[in-house]
Amino acid sequence: PAWLPREPPELPILLSRRFGEAIRHQQFDWATKEDVVNMFHPDVEFMNVHGEYFEGREDVLKSLNESVQRMSTRMRLSSARGDGSTLKFMKFTTEGPKYDGRGRRANWSVWTMDYSFKLLLLTVRIREYISIDDNTELIMKLARKRIK
Image 1 (cartoon, rainbow, N blue to C red):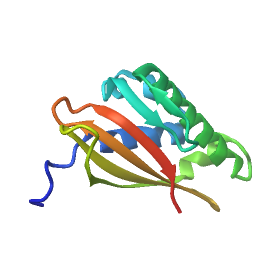
Image 2 (tube, rainbow, N blue to C red):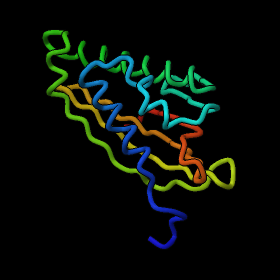
Image 3 (cartoon, rainbow, N blue to C red):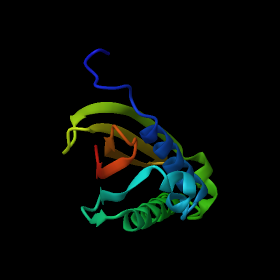
């Protein structure tokens, strides 16, 4: 649409795919793979769903790895067998990216992605706010929260 300052970026879509695959396949080092590392600015900031704040690419990526480990554990425990074999049946959907306005700086745009993870009777929904530098195409800020 004409009101958008730019086309929706590819980074949120790529990041969401890698995040979903990491949970499904229990890849606890997914965020420190080169393709994911290259999505983030060295001074990136991150607030996870627990309200914990991280600054700098190394700490942010470590936290993203830990979030996949926590989510995988939660999904595994919801299954009857309590192991990772049922994760392949997990339904993972995303919505977005949706434009959410300008960021803290004039050259940043903010986008939202909604994630839904369903396994048996457990459903976890997360909204992710992503600030992208429109000049470098790198993620500058990331924040997640649970949604109903």
